[in-house]
Length: 398
Ligand code: NAD
Ligand code: MG
Image (cartoon, rainbow, N blue to C red; front, side, top):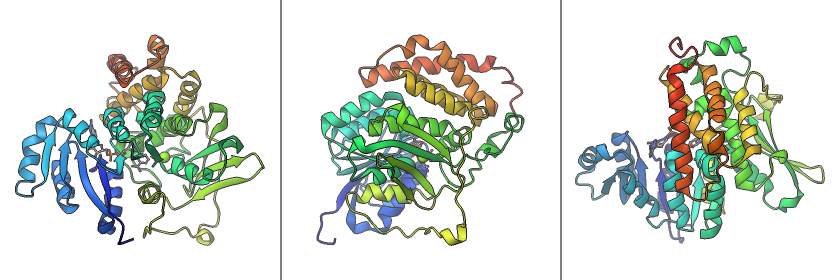
């Protein structure tokens, strides 16, 4: 592989959990990659450190107010520095062979669409992009001939298991969920749970937003919508299975009765590596599964009573239109409020549900452009935020 040209790569959201894991892999094989652009938000010191360590050409913070700090941190390095929303789009447009989209939330939609426009490979971690603007996003991928490589572990697993099978021979795709920290908790216990409890994920180490989504099972709901768009599968061909060990990431049922699954230890470097090395595979020195020691893998149906977020997301999947953007916007507001202790844990799904009811007019809209998605997103956020102070028990929340 030493005779090959290095792959030019950029990482949007370099300072996050996925960004760090991506750069860990890159740093282990420095001759194989040329790092073009790295982006971050408020953690300027870490962004600068990563840019120097990986010899990036460009470092961008989405936070316009942090420009001087980043400039200072990278003074004398020769690394180009920029800040703000437009600079973020420029970073995504810098010619690269492979771009990791790992910004959290719908904030990543515009830059990820810019990356798609290059028509090269986009590794997609940012699931909120697809939940909010799936139709538009997939249309842009097709229009620009980009290769979309799913990074979410379940979707990477699905892609791996489906490779080599004609789409019409796939009967169903089942995403597994760890069940999160509250898998066995009663509703009464969950009502008292604060960020300290919800942030303790049993298997995965991830950013705060996706960790809270995992505790409410909203994450699995978002992933159903993500799978619907990524694999062009109708809702009735998608399902969820709780699997507390997080070893089996997805099960693909074929029409001949065969089921193909992908197994690996819960470490995001495995699915990231699949996207980074694609169409090849690379060595990842992480933990190997030891089934004899594990002894058993268990599976159970999700409980829609205790985890209403999953039910809401399934309804949104069936509804389509602007429903995905509303669901995502309300959930982003709710999770942020929960992390600030302005909303109890049960209030997350509660606020999302009332916002969905409040936004029937927005749900009926069909977004034709990314701007339409942002309009629905902003209006749904405004309505969700409006509700927040009046939320029953909001003051008493932890
Ligand atoms: P994180 O919070 O650790 O990192 C988020 C990154 O986005 C950081 O680099 C941050 O600086 C940047 N960012 C935050 N707000 C921004 C804004 N407004 N504009 C521009 N950049 C901004 O999150 P993460 O856990 O790495 O997750 C990233 C995405 O990947 C999420 O969509 C998440 O759902 C998805 N994902 C993560 C995991 C995981 O294991 N962490 C697994 C599957 C999917
Ligand atoms: Mg996942």
